[in-house]
Length: 441
Image 1: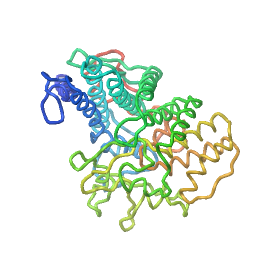
Image 2: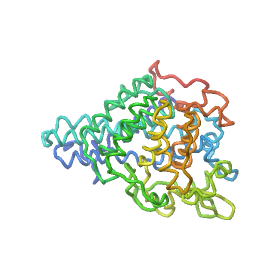
Image 3: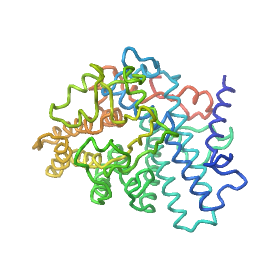
Image 4: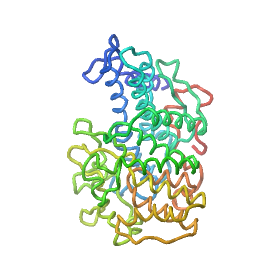
């Protein structure tokens, strides 16, 4: 059994180096690898392609954050057992979908690290070209390390390519160590990338926005405020007047970073969200309890959830036929809510908190709030994040980082359940004594 998993892992490692070792039209043969500026560009694009995996932004990663929380349920007529485990917060280490997330994200890290290792030695690039390429790659590496840590806790930090079986054994690094590398990568990206209207490539604003989110999760609220404000004041993105327009087309004025999907590189989000009566699989559906929390006047409800008869389903990503709609990773509304929450947790600047909340509420057609009590403001922000960012992959992470999962989720009875299990395949193939299972599994 162990040999089987090793061969699988080796195959993944080889796939991670496709941009170096094979010769399809979108990659580079090993004998010619990274000689020209266009070679470097193709290498960087290969790192972006990793985000499209069905186990990553193509489906599972974002859906599971809502399914593990109280936003989505796994309907009785659905068939994916792995999704049942996530919905019940009773995940086995053998869960194939969770294994897929782990593998896809480490695959993406290996692609990025392979390209990062080549860029500095390229004579065809000047220093500005090198730093721009590295800025994009460091952004992608930071994003993926951050996303891994949000599900699994401490993880092996990977900043060099994994090539061959001798390098597959790695222990878990502490969250603090991983956070430090994430922040280092993003600061480099922020300093070496420009603001841009192109949403499917990393930019200064994307790096600053992700830094704001990272600092919020790290509970470094002063820095979260600084970086959220940089994005808000930068004016590269603007809040759209109508909430529904955020998802109507790719690359709206409100988004900061999106994962590019096309009919050739499709996502399967709508397929899993849409019910059988709409030719989807119906593996997930909005919970009735969540739907009942919306104010009747909240314009976000009808932009988020539709009905087939009496069956609700999510419509933010609705391209069922081709799966070509881009997936939003960062957008401006989140920055207002990050700044509001950070100020509230620092018990400071009530007027700014109210203003940041109300700019989001007013667009949704809701009355402004005038709460001045900080604990009540924190609760209000938690609710606004749930409505504003519904089904965009935030809710589980919000409940875990704030310690609220045990309070609000009936199926979470132990703090150990707030981390997903390390996949059994990783424990079998990774012989490093520092690779241990999360408590409770």
